[in-house]
Length: 333
Image (tube, rainbow, N blue to C red; front, side, top):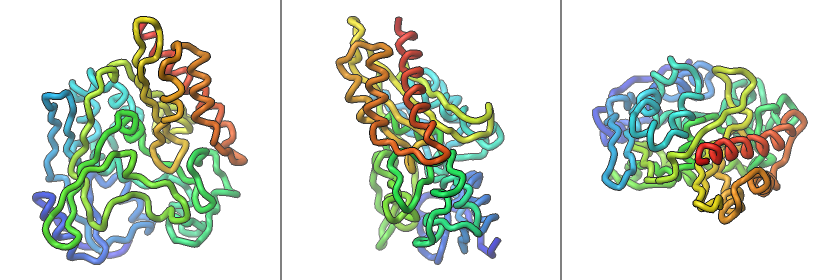
């Protein structure tokens, strides 16, 4: 681990000023991912800026939306009464991730920005375009059971590891950002769906964040039918394992049994949380049932490409989508 300095920031503006004065600063929340990366010398910051003292409140607004401070711990968000009752898929997604000890440490902002758990990314002896541009990708011919089937590129087949982000993608959450590229602090808001990038030929550039830009909050818009929602994670073992495939879903069915609206997002299948827009479109106006659910899953996975070890994930994703939607349909009957 290389030498670094450590600073505490009282607020976002102070954190950004500190970062702008360093050559290679990193913001430190719970440290559950960053410290691992530093230990493996994948990340080598010259300064760590503690942002755990930034606001950590969960505010319910009059319109039914939630504003969640980036320093809120995962456990606190999952346990919040408004989240449990209004957005149950988010609670279930958070509880499906990591261990209780890690959830108690990890922050919402850090969860969103965690990096892939691809073994070749962590191995400095392996070729990895994400770690070093132009180095190659050993995962393509290596052990790729956990890798992407959607949105991958010749340069990178890694997947995003977050469970929480899959639920936030389904909920069309927004990310509040603060930065200071050329002087005075400035603020902007991005959809979570627009924050993370697909790999293309630059998998080393993972998000649309500007240099030293800081996540300050997450906004979850109101969605009445999110009360009928869930999250299912398929993995190799029951705990402390990343998803082979996961599905976050919310379903709105009218009195005639037709799908009025639906929200679907997939995890474990792409370089970013994958919003299943084709499946959502295929569901609207259709009679809710196994046939329409399967057709929607087929539409979403039509462009999926499997590799030697992960071809099974294509059918697994389809079946998981159908199973989750059938579960939600049953809840409304």
